[in-house]
Image (cartoon, rainbow, N blue to C red; front, side, top):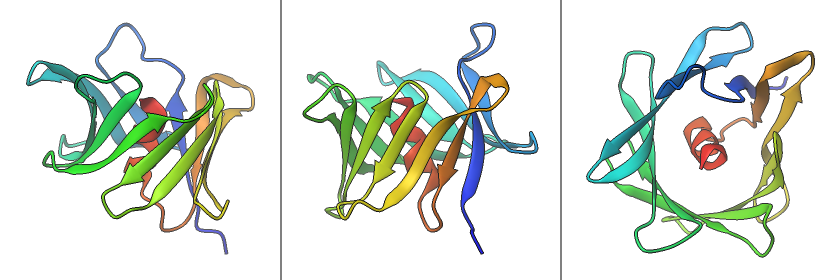
Length: 150
């Protein structure tokens, strides 16, 4: 049986809010996305519904098109850099893994070095306010969401 995780990600924050919810397909909040200034930089935080931090993402200092993904307590996890084309990014982790994200708009794919699909996004049929994020079994949802939102 398939054990993929399927989430709804809003296409935009409503009413200028600095946070929004990522929900399951039944509409229950799973993760909250928060934008907050810390240490002089705008940061993206993924939190639980109770406010516990799961992951962070911050622009790399002194560079363009590079973002650092951080663990819950701020430890460096990896970096997201633009690839050879405007619609390609590479995520390089401290463990040496390299994942590739290709696509534009609300349609993107995340693959490993062997071309295996780890996550994908697609517009939700009949719903202009959300798009679907499908994550393969054993893939970290926080990594996928941080990568898509940067």
